[in-house]
Amino acid sequence: MNEQVVLVTGGAGYIGSHACVELLQSGYRVIVVDNLSNSKIESLSRVKQITGKTLQFYQADIRDKKALAEIFAKEPIATVMHFAGLKAVGESCEQPLNYYHNNVYGTLVLTEVMAEANVKQLVFSSSATVYGEPSCVQYVEDFPLGAVNPYGRSKAMIEDILRDLSVADKHIQTKSPWKIALLRYFNPIGAHESGMIGEDPNGIPNNLMPYVSQVAIGKLEQLAVFGDDYPTRDGTGIRDYIHVVDLVKGHIKAIDALESEKFSLGGCKAYNLGAGRGCSVLEIISAFERVTGRKVNYRVAPRRAGDLAEFFANPELALKELNWKVEKNLDDMVADTWNWQSKNPQGYV
Ligand SMILES: NC(=O)c1ccc[n+]([C@@H]2O[C@H](COP(=O)([O-])OP(=O)(O)OC[C@H]3O[C@@H](n4cnc5c(N)ncnc54)[C@H](O)[C@@H]3O)[C@@H](O)[C@H]2O)c1
Image 1 (spheres, helix red, strand yellow):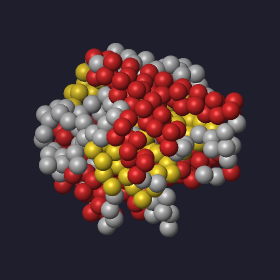
Image 2 (cartoon, rainbow, N blue to C red):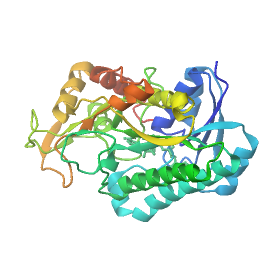
Image 3 (tube, rainbow, N blue to C red):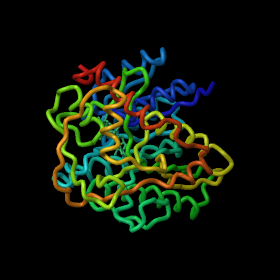
């Protein structure tokens, strides 16, 4: 068993709570820091119920340097998984300062405290939004970056900051260099198979899958499918969906890689975490109806400005260097989403 202590920022959130389960089940000790701005503490009670294990929770903002420094002074942290952040593209266009302050400044404070505590192993939640609009539909890590909204730019800025930290190490030839994995998620969906934790968006969901499941359960009336005239197999947009449990397993593999020979001299490297294949909006709807037996009421609406027809990950680097690939398929993602939604129609209450 691995007794290493992992600090999970944003651990009460959707992906963070699934990461806590996976870490605890892999034998790590877990400390969560979350300000609960977009989550509920109940998620962590459920994590404890699923795993039969305990974790340490600190309600704090990662921008609060004093609070963070106290946690690092108290706890023997070896690695940080950094999920804390704001994530809604539309909201980021309305509140860019809030997004840069929370995501970029928050990461600056976190890494300053880590450096002062000499904790230099970090797994960061990046996003496929850093790629912008490359002409090719299958994204490879060394494509030029070009985020097109404040959310994506906040992730790209953080990636740059973390790369700079790693390069600075080479200049000073430190004995304990930064070891950083930038994990670029495609579209995480699904939930833990127990149905006890899942995505619990505040208000109207921004993402397709929670929207579909809330229509199916009758919480929302109708899904709008934005555009059915794209040059794709059925005219609707194609994205790379990845089961959240597969995604968090990639984080554990990333820790393994950071501790391996490959990173012995330190470094900062980006990896795509995606399935490497895309599903269209209509394919998601029809899988949902088939797996759950529920009708999804939808209408076709005009395309949304800025939406691309199709993109998905090239996940070969993650397979080669992290020994990771997805194991679950679309039916698993749909069944687990529905299990969570039907057991928790109002989310965590
Ligand atoms: N869900 C996705 O589709 C997706 C895709 C790509 C990348 N990501 C990234 O993955 C990470 C986790 O996403 P998620 O879907 O679990 O989101 P989430 O909102 O469910 O979780 C984020 C958590 O961070 C906390 N948080 C936010 N700002 C904080 C701060 N300043 N201090 C302390 N805690 C703070 C929130 O309360 C929440 O619990 C985010 O960084 C997000 O940008 C998510």
